[in-house]
Amino acid sequence: MFCLSASFSDYVEIPTKESFFFFANFCCNNFFHSFNNILQNIWENMHKLLTVFLYLVSHFVYIFLPKFPSVVFCAARSCWKVFLDTRFLCRTGDVLCVCLQGMAFSMEERLQLGIHGLLPPCFISQDVQLLRVLKNYDMKKDDLDRYVFLMGLQDRNEKLFYRLISSDVERFMPIIYTPTVGLACQQYGLIFRRPRGLFITIHDGGHIASILQNWPEKDIKAVCVTDGERILGLGDLGCHGMGIPVGKLALYTACGGMPPQQCLPVMLDVGTDNEVRTDFQYGMDCLIQFEDFANVNAFRLLSKYRNKYCTFNDDIQGTAAVAVAGLLAALRITKSKMCDHTIVFQGAGEAAMGIAELITMSMEKEGLSKEESLKKIWMVDSKGLIVKGRDHLTHEKERFAHSHSQMKNLEDVVRELRPTAIIGVAAVPGAFSEQIIKDMASFNERPIIFALSNPTSKAECTAEQCYKLTEGRAIFASGSPFDPVTLPDGKTLYPGQGNNAYIFPGVGLSVTACAIRHITEEIFLTAAEALAHMVTERDLAEGRLYPPLSSIRDVSLKLAAKIIEYAYKHNIATLRPEPFDKDAFVRSLCFNTAYDDFTVDTYHWPEDCMAVQSCKL
Image 1 (cartoon, rainbow, N blue to C red):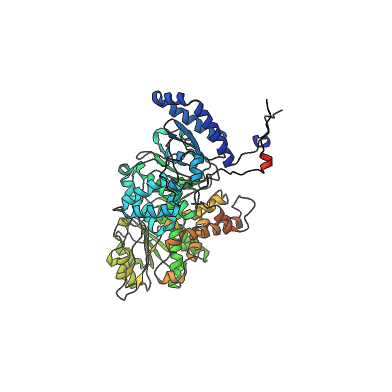
Image 2: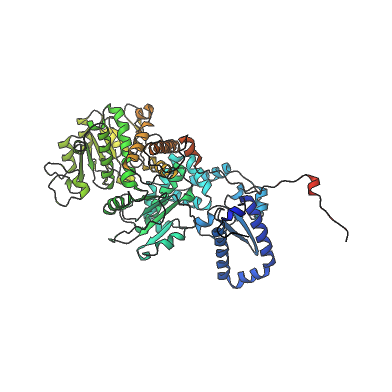
Protein backbone atom coordinates (compact mmCIF):
# COMPACT_ATOMS: atom_id res chain seq x y z
CA MET A 1 0.00 0.00 0.00
CA PHE A 2 1.48 3.36 -1.00
CA CYS A 3 1.92 5.61 2.02
CA LEU A 4 0.99 9.21 1.25
CA SER A 5 3.18 10.57 4.01
CA ALA A 6 6.29 8.90 2.64
CA SER A 7 8.78 10.61 0.39
CA PHE A 8 8.65 9.80 -3.30
CA SER A 9 12.36 8.96 -3.15
CA ASP A 10 11.62 6.29 -0.52
CA TYR A 11 9.89 4.20 -3.17
CA VAL A 12 11.41 5.28 -6.47
CA GLU A 13 15.07 5.63 -7.30
CA ILE A 14 15.65 9.11 -8.73
CA PRO A 15 16.94 8.56 -12.27
CA THR A 16 20.15 9.97 -13.62
CA LYS A 17 20.24 12.72 -16.24
CA GLU A 18 21.02 10.12 -18.94
CA SER A 19 18.23 7.74 -18.00
CA PHE A 20 15.73 10.57 -17.75
CA PHE A 21 16.79 11.88 -21.14
CA PHE A 22 16.35 8.44 -22.71
CA PHE A 23 12.92 8.02 -21.14
CA ALA A 24 11.72 11.52 -22.06
CA ASN A 25 13.05 11.27 -25.59
CA PHE A 26 11.46 7.85 -26.09
CA CYS A 27 8.06 8.92 -24.74
CA CYS A 28 7.94 12.22 -26.59
CA ASN A 29 9.10 10.74 -29.89
CA ASN A 30 6.35 8.13 -29.77
CA PHE A 31 3.71 10.53 -28.54
CA PHE A 32 4.40 13.19 -31.15
CA HIS A 33 4.75 10.64 -33.93
CA SER A 34 1.29 9.27 -33.15
CA PHE A 35 -0.30 12.69 -33.23
CA ASN A 36 1.77 14.16 -36.02
CA ASN A 37 -1.19 15.17 -38.17
CA ILE A 38 -3.01 16.74 -35.24
CA LEU A 39 0.02 18.79 -34.33
CA GLN A 40 0.47 19.87 -37.92
CA ASN A 41 -3.09 21.21 -37.99
CA ILE A 42 -2.60 22.95 -34.67
CA TRP A 43 0.60 24.53 -35.97
CA GLU A 44 -1.12 25.82 -39.08
CA ASN A 45 -4.44 26.88 -37.59
CA MET A 46 -4.02 27.37 -33.87
CA HIS A 47 -0.51 28.70 -33.30
CA LYS A 48 -1.35 30.29 -29.98
CA LEU A 49 -2.75 27.06 -28.57
CA LEU A 50 0.44 25.25 -29.55
CA THR A 51 2.56 27.81 -27.75
CA VAL A 52 0.50 27.35 -24.58
CA PHE A 53 0.79 23.58 -24.95
CA LEU A 54 4.59 23.73 -25.12
CA TYR A 55 4.68 26.11 -22.19
CA LEU A 56 2.58 23.77 -20.04
CA VAL A 57 4.61 20.69 -20.97
CA SER A 58 7.90 22.38 -20.16
CA HIS A 59 6.60 23.64 -16.84
CA PHE A 60 5.09 20.23 -16.03
CA VAL A 61 8.54 18.68 -16.36
CA TYR A 62 10.14 21.58 -14.48
CA ILE A 63 7.68 21.41 -11.57
CA PHE A 64 7.52 17.66 -11.11
CA LEU A 65 11.15 16.90 -11.88
CA PRO A 66 12.97 19.84 -10.29
CA LYS A 67 16.28 18.03 -10.00
CA PHE A 68 16.68 17.92 -13.78
CA PRO A 69 17.83 20.72 -16.07
CA SER A 70 15.28 22.77 -17.88
CA VAL A 71 13.67 21.07 -20.86
CA VAL A 72 14.04 22.82 -24.17
CA PHE A 73 11.91 22.01 -27.20
CA CYS A 74 13.12 22.35 -30.72
CA ALA A 75 11.07 22.24 -33.88
CA ALA A 76 12.06 20.93 -37.26
CA ARG A 77 8.93 21.32 -39.39
CA SER A 78 6.39 18.83 -37.98
CA CYS A 79 8.88 16.69 -36.05
CA TRP A 80 9.29 17.53 -32.37
CA LYS A 81 12.28 16.55 -30.28
CA VAL A 82 13.16 16.97 -26.64
CA PHE A 83 16.65 17.53 -25.35
CA LEU A 84 18.20 18.64 -22.10
CA ASP A 85 20.19 21.55 -21.22
CA THR A 86 20.81 24.34 -19.57
CA ARG A 87 19.13 27.50 -18.77
CA PHE A 88 18.75 28.57 -22.41
CA LEU A 89 14.98 28.69 -22.08
CA CYS A 90 15.27 30.43 -18.72
CA ARG A 91 17.66 33.12 -19.85
CA THR A 92 16.32 34.11 -23.24
CA GLY A 93 12.62 33.34 -23.15
CA ASP A 94 12.91 31.49 -26.48
CA VAL A 95 10.75 28.37 -26.65
CA LEU A 96 12.28 27.02 -29.82
CA CYS A 97 16.02 26.63 -30.24
CA VAL A 98 18.31 24.15 -31.90
CA CYS A 99 21.78 24.35 -30.45
CA LEU A 100 23.46 25.50 -27.30
CA GLN A 101 27.08 24.68 -27.99
CA GLY A 102 26.93 24.86 -31.76
CA MET A 103 29.17 22.65 -33.82
CA ALA A 104 30.85 21.34 -30.69
CA PHE A 105 28.10 18.70 -30.49
CA SER A 106 29.57 15.30 -31.38
CA MET A 107 27.97 13.02 -33.97
CA GLU A 108 26.58 10.79 -31.22
CA GLU A 109 25.04 13.78 -29.45
CA ARG A 110 23.47 15.08 -32.65
CA LEU A 111 21.91 11.70 -33.39
CA GLN A 112 20.65 11.13 -29.86
CA LEU A 113 19.32 14.66 -29.47
CA GLY A 114 17.62 14.56 -32.83
CA ILE A 115 19.47 17.57 -34.20
CA HIS A 116 21.56 15.85 -36.86
CA GLY A 117 21.12 17.77 -40.08
CA LEU A 118 20.20 20.98 -38.25
CA LEU A 119 23.88 21.88 -37.92
CA PRO A 120 26.57 22.12 -40.58
CA PRO A 121 28.39 18.77 -41.18
CA CYS A 122 31.43 19.85 -39.21
CA PHE A 123 32.73 19.19 -35.72
CA ILE A 124 34.87 21.75 -33.86
CA SER A 125 36.16 22.08 -30.32
CA GLN A 126 35.48 24.89 -27.89
CA ASP A 127 39.05 26.08 -28.51
CA VAL A 128 38.27 26.67 -32.18
CA GLN A 129 35.04 28.41 -31.22
CA LEU A 130 37.06 30.66 -28.93
CA LEU A 131 39.39 31.62 -31.79
CA ARG A 132 36.39 32.40 -34.00
CA VAL A 133 34.87 34.62 -31.33
CA LEU A 134 38.15 36.48 -30.88
CA LYS A 135 38.38 37.03 -34.63
CA ASN A 136 34.86 38.46 -34.74
CA TYR A 137 35.55 40.54 -31.63
CA ASP A 138 38.58 42.15 -33.26
CA MET A 139 36.46 43.20 -36.22
CA LYS A 140 34.21 45.44 -34.08
CA LYS A 141 34.87 49.13 -34.57
CA ASP A 142 34.31 50.47 -31.03
CA ASP A 143 33.77 49.41 -27.43
CA LEU A 144 29.98 49.70 -27.58
CA ASP A 145 29.88 47.30 -30.55
CA ARG A 146 32.16 44.96 -28.61
CA TYR A 147 29.82 45.14 -25.62
CA VAL A 148 26.79 44.26 -27.79
CA PHE A 149 28.73 41.39 -29.36
CA LEU A 150 29.73 39.93 -25.98
CA MET A 151 26.22 40.22 -24.57
CA GLY A 152 24.91 38.39 -27.62
CA LEU A 153 27.44 35.63 -27.03
CA GLN A 154 26.32 35.41 -23.41
CA ASP A 155 22.75 34.86 -24.60
CA ARG A 156 23.70 32.25 -27.20
CA ASN A 157 26.43 30.25 -25.51
CA GLU A 158 26.98 31.01 -21.84
CA LYS A 159 29.85 28.59 -21.33
CA LEU A 160 31.78 29.95 -24.29
CA PHE A 161 31.15 33.49 -23.05
CA TYR A 162 32.72 32.78 -19.65
CA ARG A 163 35.55 30.81 -21.26
CA LEU A 164 36.29 33.92 -23.33
CA ILE A 165 36.17 36.35 -20.38
CA SER A 166 38.30 34.09 -18.19
CA SER A 167 40.90 33.74 -20.95
CA ASP A 168 41.84 37.44 -20.67
CA VAL A 169 39.99 39.22 -17.87
CA GLU A 170 42.19 42.30 -18.12
CA ARG A 171 41.15 42.77 -21.75
CA PHE A 172 37.43 42.06 -21.48
CA MET A 173 36.49 43.46 -18.05
CA PRO A 174 36.54 47.10 -19.24
CA ILE A 175 34.05 46.06 -21.94
CA ILE A 176 31.51 44.06 -19.93
CA TYR A 177 31.81 46.41 -16.97
CA THR A 178 33.20 49.85 -16.24
CA PRO A 179 33.85 52.01 -18.17
CA THR A 180 31.97 50.66 -21.24
CA VAL A 181 28.93 49.53 -19.26
CA GLY A 182 28.23 53.20 -18.48
CA LEU A 183 27.88 53.99 -22.18
CA ALA A 184 25.88 50.79 -22.66
CA CYS A 185 23.39 51.91 -20.00
CA GLN A 186 23.05 55.31 -21.65
CA GLN A 187 22.38 53.60 -24.99
CA TYR A 188 20.35 50.72 -23.50
CA GLY A 189 17.20 51.51 -25.44
CA LEU A 190 19.14 51.45 -28.70
CA ILE A 191 21.23 48.30 -28.17
CA PHE A 192 18.52 46.23 -26.42
CA ARG A 193 18.30 42.72 -27.90
CA ARG A 194 17.05 40.23 -25.34
CA PRO A 195 15.96 40.77 -21.74
CA ARG A 196 18.14 39.60 -18.89
CA GLY A 197 16.94 39.73 -15.29
CA LEU A 198 13.69 40.89 -13.70
CA PHE A 199 12.14 44.32 -14.19
CA ILE A 200 9.88 45.41 -11.32
CA THR A 201 8.04 48.74 -11.57
CA ILE A 202 6.22 50.96 -9.13
CA HIS A 203 2.93 49.63 -10.52
CA ASP A 204 3.76 46.09 -9.38
CA GLY A 205 3.37 46.80 -5.67
CA GLY A 206 1.79 43.88 -3.87
CA HIS A 207 2.59 41.49 -6.71
CA ILE A 208 6.38 41.26 -6.44
CA ALA A 209 6.21 37.69 -5.14
CA SER A 210 4.39 36.53 -8.26
CA ILE A 211 6.93 38.32 -10.48
CA LEU A 212 9.78 36.59 -8.70
CA GLN A 213 8.03 33.28 -9.31
CA ASN A 214 8.31 33.94 -13.05
CA TRP A 215 12.07 33.54 -12.88
CA PRO A 216 12.68 29.92 -13.93
CA GLU A 217 15.74 29.24 -11.78
CA LYS A 218 14.77 28.52 -8.18
CA ASP A 219 18.16 27.89 -6.58
CA ILE A 220 19.15 31.56 -6.40
CA LYS A 221 22.22 32.31 -4.29
CA ALA A 222 22.96 35.94 -5.23
CA VAL A 223 20.71 38.83 -6.25
CA CYS A 224 22.07 42.14 -7.51
CA VAL A 225 19.41 44.85 -7.34
CA THR A 226 19.41 48.50 -8.41
CA ASP A 227 16.84 51.25 -8.78
CA GLY A 228 18.92 52.98 -11.45
CA GLU A 229 18.93 56.27 -9.55
CA ARG A 230 22.72 56.71 -9.43
CA ILE A 231 24.28 54.69 -12.22
CA LEU A 232 28.05 55.15 -11.84
CA GLY A 233 28.50 58.93 -12.10
CA LEU A 234 25.84 59.29 -14.78
CA GLY A 235 22.73 60.03 -12.71
CA ASP A 236 19.25 58.48 -12.81
CA LEU A 237 18.95 56.21 -15.85
CA GLY A 238 15.85 54.32 -14.73
CA CYS A 239 15.44 50.84 -16.21
CA HIS A 240 18.35 51.54 -18.56
CA GLY A 241 20.52 50.82 -15.53
CA MET A 242 19.87 47.06 -15.86
CA GLY A 243 23.31 46.80 -17.48
CA ILE A 244 24.87 47.32 -14.04
CA PRO A 245 23.45 44.27 -12.18
CA VAL A 246 23.87 42.15 -15.32
CA GLY A 247 27.54 43.18 -15.54
CA LYS A 248 28.13 42.73 -11.82
CA LEU A 249 26.77 39.19 -11.82
CA ALA A 250 28.76 38.33 -14.93
CA LEU A 251 31.83 39.18 -12.87
CA TYR A 252 30.55 37.00 -10.01
CA THR A 253 31.00 34.11 -12.43
CA ALA A 254 34.03 35.27 -14.43
CA CYS A 255 36.06 36.36 -11.38
CA GLY A 256 34.54 34.41 -8.49
CA GLY A 257 33.38 31.25 -10.22
CA MET A 258 29.79 31.44 -8.97
CA PRO A 259 27.47 29.43 -11.28
CA PRO A 260 25.48 31.91 -13.42
CA GLN A 261 22.19 30.06 -12.88
CA GLN A 262 22.46 30.98 -9.19
CA CYS A 263 22.59 34.73 -9.95
CA LEU A 264 19.60 37.03 -10.49
CA PRO A 265 19.79 40.67 -11.71
CA VAL A 266 16.85 42.85 -10.63
CA MET A 267 15.84 46.36 -11.69
CA LEU A 268 13.45 48.34 -9.46
CA ASP A 269 12.00 51.02 -11.72
CA VAL A 270 10.12 53.15 -9.20
CA GLY A 271 10.15 56.46 -11.03
CA THR A 272 11.42 59.75 -9.64
CA ASP A 273 11.24 60.83 -5.98
CA ASN A 274 9.26 57.76 -4.94
CA GLU A 275 10.02 55.69 -1.88
CA VAL A 276 11.72 52.36 -2.50
CA ARG A 277 10.03 49.47 -0.70
CA THR A 278 12.06 46.29 -0.87
CA ASP A 279 10.28 42.93 -0.69
CA PHE A 280 12.58 40.04 0.19
CA GLN A 281 11.29 36.69 -1.07
CA TYR A 282 14.50 34.70 -0.87
CA GLY A 283 15.80 33.05 2.27
CA MET A 284 18.60 33.91 4.62
CA ASP A 285 21.12 31.99 2.53
CA CYS A 286 20.56 34.24 -0.50
CA LEU A 287 22.91 37.19 -0.85
CA ILE A 288 21.27 40.53 -1.73
CA GLN A 289 23.66 43.11 -3.19
CA PHE A 290 22.41 46.71 -3.42
CA GLU A 291 23.90 48.57 -6.35
CA ASP A 292 23.82 52.22 -7.46
CA PHE A 293 21.06 53.46 -5.17
CA ALA A 294 21.09 57.19 -4.40
CA ASN A 295 22.70 58.20 -1.10
CA VAL A 296 19.56 58.59 0.98
CA ASN A 297 18.16 55.20 -0.04
CA ALA A 298 21.52 53.44 0.02
CA PHE A 299 22.23 54.24 3.67
CA ARG A 300 18.61 53.73 4.72
CA LEU A 301 18.22 50.31 3.11
CA LEU A 302 21.60 49.07 4.32
CA SER A 303 20.86 50.18 7.87
CA LYS A 304 17.39 48.63 7.78
CA TYR A 305 18.29 45.21 6.38
CA ARG A 306 21.93 44.48 7.19
CA ASN A 307 21.06 42.74 10.47
CA LYS A 308 17.95 41.02 9.11
CA TYR A 309 19.16 39.54 5.85
CA CYS A 310 22.37 38.58 4.09
CA THR A 311 22.96 41.87 2.30
CA PHE A 312 25.56 44.52 1.52
CA ASN A 313 25.91 47.66 -0.58
CA ASP A 314 28.79 47.46 -3.02
CA ASP A 315 29.01 51.24 -3.51
CA ILE A 316 29.51 51.71 0.23
CA GLN A 317 31.24 48.56 1.43
CA GLY A 318 32.76 47.06 -1.71
CA THR A 319 34.34 50.36 -2.73
CA ALA A 320 35.54 50.81 0.84
CA ALA A 321 37.29 47.45 0.89
CA VAL A 322 39.11 47.94 -2.42
CA ALA A 323 40.15 51.50 -1.49
CA VAL A 324 41.44 50.46 1.93
CA ALA A 325 43.29 47.56 0.31
CA GLY A 326 45.04 50.12 -1.89
CA LEU A 327 45.90 52.27 1.13
CA LEU A 328 47.26 49.25 3.02
CA ALA A 329 49.47 48.42 0.04
CA ALA A 330 50.60 52.06 -0.14
CA LEU A 331 51.67 51.88 3.52
CA ARG A 332 54.32 49.36 2.50
CA ILE A 333 55.79 52.00 0.19
CA THR A 334 55.65 54.87 2.71
CA LYS A 335 56.81 52.61 5.58
CA SER A 336 54.07 54.01 7.81
CA LYS A 337 50.88 53.01 9.60
CA MET A 338 47.32 54.00 8.74
CA CYS A 339 47.01 56.13 11.86
CA ASP A 340 49.97 58.25 10.70
CA HIS A 341 47.95 59.67 7.80
CA THR A 342 45.55 62.57 7.35
CA ILE A 343 43.07 61.92 4.55
CA VAL A 344 40.90 64.38 2.62
CA PHE A 345 37.94 63.14 0.58
CA GLN A 346 36.61 64.94 -2.47
CA GLY A 347 32.99 63.82 -2.07
CA ALA A 348 30.91 62.80 0.92
CA GLY A 349 28.51 60.25 -0.53
CA GLU A 350 28.17 56.49 -0.23
CA ALA A 351 31.69 55.63 -1.34
CA ALA A 352 33.37 58.27 0.84
CA MET A 353 31.43 57.21 3.94
CA GLY A 354 32.15 53.55 3.36
CA ILE A 355 35.87 54.10 2.82
CA ALA A 356 36.13 56.42 5.82
CA GLU A 357 34.37 53.92 8.08
CA LEU A 358 36.74 51.13 7.10
CA ILE A 359 39.77 53.39 7.50
CA THR A 360 38.73 54.21 11.06
CA MET A 361 38.36 50.49 11.79
CA SER A 362 41.88 49.92 10.47
CA MET A 363 43.20 52.74 12.64
CA GLU A 364 41.43 51.32 15.69
CA LYS A 365 43.04 47.97 14.96
CA GLU A 366 46.41 49.77 15.18
CA GLY A 367 45.50 51.09 18.63
CA LEU A 368 43.98 54.51 17.91
CA SER A 369 40.68 55.39 19.59
CA LYS A 370 37.50 55.86 17.57
CA GLU A 371 37.41 59.60 18.30
CA GLU A 372 41.03 60.13 17.31
CA SER A 373 40.65 58.12 14.12
CA LEU A 374 37.64 60.22 13.03
CA LYS A 375 39.73 63.37 13.43
CA LYS A 376 42.16 62.04 10.82
CA ILE A 377 39.50 62.18 8.12
CA TRP A 378 38.14 65.30 6.41
CA MET A 379 35.47 65.55 3.72
CA VAL A 380 34.61 68.12 1.07
CA ASP A 381 31.21 67.99 -0.61
CA SER A 382 29.51 70.28 -3.14
CA LYS A 383 29.15 72.99 -0.47
CA GLY A 384 32.72 72.87 0.73
CA LEU A 385 34.53 71.51 3.77
CA ILE A 386 32.28 69.63 6.20
CA VAL A 387 32.66 71.36 9.55
CA LYS A 388 30.71 71.56 12.76
CA GLY A 389 27.93 74.12 12.74
CA ARG A 390 27.28 73.85 9.01
CA ASP A 391 23.58 73.68 8.13
CA HIS A 392 21.72 70.64 6.79
CA LEU A 393 24.31 67.98 7.51
CA THR A 394 23.09 64.39 7.31
CA HIS A 395 23.69 61.99 10.18
CA GLU A 396 26.49 60.31 8.23
CA LYS A 397 28.27 63.61 7.50
CA GLU A 398 27.99 64.84 11.10
CA ARG A 399 30.34 62.05 12.23
CA PHE A 400 33.12 63.55 10.12
CA ALA A 401 32.43 67.21 10.84
CA HIS A 402 35.28 68.88 12.75
CA SER A 403 35.83 72.28 14.33
CA HIS A 404 37.26 74.48 11.59
CA SER A 405 36.38 77.57 9.63
CA GLN A 406 34.27 77.01 6.55
CA MET A 407 36.15 76.61 3.28
CA LYS A 408 34.59 76.32 -0.19
CA ASN A 409 37.49 75.48 -2.45
CA LEU A 410 39.27 72.09 -2.51
CA GLU A 411 42.60 73.72 -3.36
CA ASP A 412 42.36 75.88 -0.22
CA VAL A 413 41.40 72.84 1.88
CA VAL A 414 44.41 70.84 0.67
CA ARG A 415 46.76 73.79 1.23
CA GLU A 416 45.33 74.37 4.73
CA LEU A 417 45.13 70.77 6.02
CA ARG A 418 48.27 69.44 4.26
CA PRO A 419 46.93 65.86 3.95
CA THR A 420 49.09 62.85 3.17
CA ALA A 421 46.34 61.31 1.02
CA ILE A 422 43.47 62.62 -1.10
CA ILE A 423 40.67 60.39 -2.36
CA GLY A 424 38.24 61.45 -5.08
CA VAL A 425 34.81 59.79 -5.13
CA ALA A 426 32.48 62.60 -6.21
CA ALA A 427 32.55 62.05 -10.01
CA VAL A 428 33.76 65.63 -10.60
CA PRO A 429 36.05 65.51 -13.65
CA GLY A 430 39.37 67.26 -13.10
CA ALA A 431 38.70 67.96 -9.42
CA PHE A 432 42.36 67.25 -8.65
CA SER A 433 43.81 70.27 -10.41
CA GLU A 434 47.43 70.77 -11.34
CA GLN A 435 47.87 73.01 -8.30
CA ILE A 436 46.44 70.40 -5.91
CA ILE A 437 48.70 67.66 -7.27
CA LYS A 438 51.78 69.90 -7.04
CA ASP A 439 50.84 70.93 -3.49
CA MET A 440 50.49 67.28 -2.48
CA ALA A 441 53.97 66.61 -3.86
CA SER A 442 55.39 69.55 -1.90
CA PHE A 443 53.91 68.31 1.42
CA ASN A 444 54.84 64.65 1.02
CA GLU A 445 57.73 62.63 -0.32
CA ARG A 446 55.25 60.00 -1.57
CA PRO A 447 51.80 61.60 -1.85
CA ILE A 448 48.84 59.20 -2.04
CA ILE A 449 46.36 60.26 -4.74
CA PHE A 450 43.31 58.07 -5.47
CA ALA A 451 41.04 59.21 -8.35
CA LEU A 452 38.34 56.57 -7.88
CA SER A 453 35.35 58.04 -9.73
CA ASN A 454 33.80 56.09 -12.62
CA PRO A 455 33.65 56.02 -15.58
CA THR A 456 36.94 57.34 -16.99
CA SER A 457 35.32 60.59 -18.13
CA LYS A 458 34.50 61.38 -14.47
CA ALA A 459 37.99 60.75 -13.07
CA GLU A 460 39.44 63.50 -10.84
CA CYS A 461 42.72 63.36 -12.75
CA THR A 462 44.51 61.02 -15.14
CA ALA A 463 47.42 58.76 -14.27
CA GLU A 464 49.67 60.69 -16.62
CA GLN A 465 48.85 64.02 -14.97
CA CYS A 466 49.44 62.60 -11.50
CA TYR A 467 52.75 60.91 -12.26
CA LYS A 468 54.28 63.70 -14.35
CA LEU A 469 53.27 66.55 -12.02
CA THR A 470 54.82 64.70 -9.08
CA GLU A 471 57.87 63.48 -11.04
CA GLY A 472 56.79 59.89 -10.53
CA ARG A 473 56.63 60.14 -6.73
CA ALA A 474 52.85 59.86 -6.39
CA ILE A 475 51.21 56.64 -5.26
CA PHE A 476 48.23 56.55 -7.63
CA ALA A 477 45.10 54.45 -8.01
CA SER A 478 42.00 54.98 -10.13
CA GLY A 479 38.50 53.60 -10.44
CA SER A 480 38.71 53.08 -14.21
CA PRO A 481 41.70 51.74 -16.12
CA PHE A 482 44.47 54.00 -17.41
CA ASP A 483 47.32 53.12 -19.75
CA PRO A 484 50.87 52.75 -18.40
CA VAL A 485 52.82 55.99 -18.12
CA THR A 486 56.47 56.33 -19.17
CA LEU A 487 58.39 59.01 -17.29
CA PRO A 488 61.16 61.20 -18.80
CA ASP A 489 63.79 58.99 -17.17
CA GLY A 490 62.41 55.99 -19.08
CA LYS A 491 60.72 54.30 -16.12
CA THR A 492 57.25 52.92 -16.84
CA LEU A 493 54.57 52.95 -14.14
CA TYR A 494 51.41 50.87 -14.24
CA PRO A 495 48.56 52.66 -12.43
CA GLY A 496 46.58 50.50 -10.07
CA GLN A 497 42.88 50.18 -10.81
CA GLY A 498 40.84 50.07 -7.62
CA ASN A 499 38.12 47.97 -9.18
CA ASN A 500 35.41 46.61 -6.90
CA ALA A 501 35.68 43.38 -8.87
CA TYR A 502 38.66 42.54 -6.65
CA ILE A 503 36.24 42.37 -3.72
CA PHE A 504 32.60 41.52 -4.41
CA PRO A 505 33.05 38.23 -6.35
CA GLY A 506 35.17 36.77 -3.55
CA VAL A 507 32.83 38.12 -0.87
CA GLY A 508 29.78 36.76 -2.68
CA LEU A 509 31.31 33.33 -3.21
CA SER A 510 32.45 33.00 0.40
CA VAL A 511 29.22 34.26 1.92
CA THR A 512 27.06 31.85 -0.07
CA ALA A 513 29.53 28.97 0.25
CA CYS A 514 29.54 28.85 4.06
CA ALA A 515 26.04 30.30 4.53
CA ILE A 516 26.91 33.52 6.38
CA ARG A 517 23.61 35.10 7.49
CA HIS A 518 24.77 38.69 8.07
CA ILE A 519 27.74 40.43 6.42
CA THR A 520 29.64 42.50 8.96
CA GLU A 521 32.07 45.34 8.34
CA GLU A 522 34.84 43.09 9.69
CA ILE A 523 34.36 40.82 6.67
CA PHE A 524 35.19 43.71 4.37
CA LEU A 525 38.22 44.70 6.42
CA THR A 526 39.36 41.07 6.27
CA ALA A 527 38.89 41.17 2.48
CA ALA A 528 40.87 44.42 2.22
CA GLU A 529 43.75 43.04 4.28
CA ALA A 530 43.81 39.80 2.29
CA LEU A 531 43.83 41.69 -1.03
CA ALA A 532 46.64 44.02 0.09
CA HIS A 533 48.67 41.01 1.23
CA MET A 534 48.52 39.57 -2.32
CA VAL A 535 50.31 42.59 -3.79
CA THR A 536 53.95 41.64 -4.40
CA GLU A 537 57.02 43.84 -4.03
CA ARG A 538 57.41 43.72 -7.79
CA ASP A 539 53.85 45.05 -8.20
CA LEU A 540 54.64 47.94 -5.87
CA ALA A 541 57.85 48.75 -7.74
CA GLU A 542 55.84 49.01 -10.96
CA GLY A 543 53.31 51.37 -9.37
CA ARG A 544 50.58 48.76 -8.88
CA LEU A 545 48.63 48.78 -5.63
CA TYR A 546 46.61 45.73 -6.66
CA PRO A 547 47.47 42.38 -8.21
CA PRO A 548 47.29 42.34 -12.02
CA LEU A 549 43.74 41.94 -13.31
CA SER A 550 44.92 38.89 -15.23
CA SER A 551 45.16 37.06 -11.88
CA ILE A 552 41.80 38.22 -10.53
CA ARG A 553 40.23 34.74 -10.61
CA ASP A 554 42.93 33.31 -8.38
CA VAL A 555 42.79 36.43 -6.19
CA SER A 556 39.02 36.08 -5.72
CA LEU A 557 39.27 32.41 -4.75
CA LYS A 558 42.05 33.07 -2.23
CA LEU A 559 40.09 36.00 -0.80
CA ALA A 560 36.99 33.79 -0.48
CA ALA A 561 38.99 31.16 1.40
CA LYS A 562 40.30 33.82 3.82
CA ILE A 563 36.78 35.10 4.50
CA ILE A 564 35.50 31.55 5.10
CA GLU A 565 38.37 30.98 7.53
CA TYR A 566 37.44 34.20 9.35
CA ALA A 567 33.73 33.25 9.38
CA TYR A 568 34.32 29.90 11.07
CA LYS A 569 36.81 31.41 13.50
CA HIS A 570 34.21 33.96 14.64
CA ASN A 571 31.19 31.61 14.50
CA ILE A 572 29.25 33.45 11.81
CA ALA A 573 29.28 30.60 9.26
CA THR A 574 26.27 28.28 9.48
CA LEU A 575 27.38 25.53 7.07
CA ARG A 576 28.25 22.34 8.91
CA PRO A 577 30.52 20.49 9.00
CA GLU A 578 33.31 23.02 8.54
CA PRO A 579 35.38 22.30 5.43
CA PHE A 580 38.88 21.17 6.37
CA ASP A 581 40.62 22.50 3.24
CA LYS A 582 39.07 25.91 2.58
CA ASP A 583 40.89 26.47 -0.71
CA ALA A 584 39.82 23.13 -2.14
CA PHE A 585 36.27 23.68 -0.92
CA VAL A 586 36.04 27.04 -2.67
CA ARG A 587 37.47 25.71 -5.92
CA SER A 588 35.03 22.79 -5.91
CA LEU A 589 32.12 25.24 -6.15
CA CYS A 590 33.37 27.07 -9.24
CA PHE A 591 31.48 27.12 -12.51
CA ASN A 592 33.00 24.85 -15.17
CA THR A 593 33.12 26.30 -18.69
CA ALA A 594 33.70 22.89 -20.31
CA TYR A 595 30.74 21.65 -22.34
CA ASP A 596 28.47 18.99 -20.87
CA ASP A 597 28.37 15.52 -22.39
CA PHE A 598 24.87 14.81 -23.68
CA THR A 599 25.48 11.28 -24.93
CA VAL A 600 23.41 8.61 -23.25
CA ASP A 601 25.32 5.99 -21.30
CA THR A 602 25.14 2.88 -23.53
CA TYR A 603 26.60 -0.59 -22.97
CA HIS A 604 25.96 -4.27 -23.78
CA TRP A 605 25.35 -7.36 -21.70
CA PRO A 606 27.09 -10.65 -22.46
CA GLU A 607 25.77 -12.23 -25.65
CA ASP A 608 24.15 -15.19 -23.87
CA CYS A 609 22.28 -12.87 -21.53
CA MET A 610 20.88 -10.92 -24.47
CA ALA A 611 19.66 -14.00 -26.35
CA VAL A 612 16.06 -13.55 -27.45
CA GLN A 613 13.71 -16.27 -26.24
CA SER A 614 11.21 -17.32 -28.89
CA CYS A 615 8.83 -20.10 -29.74
CA LYS A 616 6.86 -21.41 -32.73
CA LEU A 617 3.17 -20.67 -32.73
